[in-house]
Image (tube, rainbow, N blue to C red; front, side, top):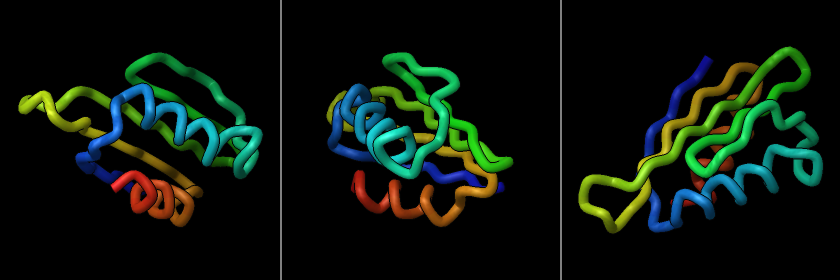
Amino acid sequence: MIRYGAKTRLAPEGVVAKARKHFGPEGIGLKITNEGSCCISFEGSGGFVKIDVAISDDGKSTDVDLQAREWEYEAGRFMKSIR
């Protein structure tokens, strides 16, 4: 299992939308198991990806917390894409 934390200039909704496109049915094909304005979760092939987002304390960026099992490579690619 891997866990990443990062800040991005994207709004929380933008991070969730980008994650849906990257990991979901139109991306690598994982099943969306939970989605909200602050989070999105996926499952598939014996693993999972869970992403939580929140406005940073400075109000100018978004904190992103990602956990993944079996999808570490794709998780790393996603995190690079939001920086």
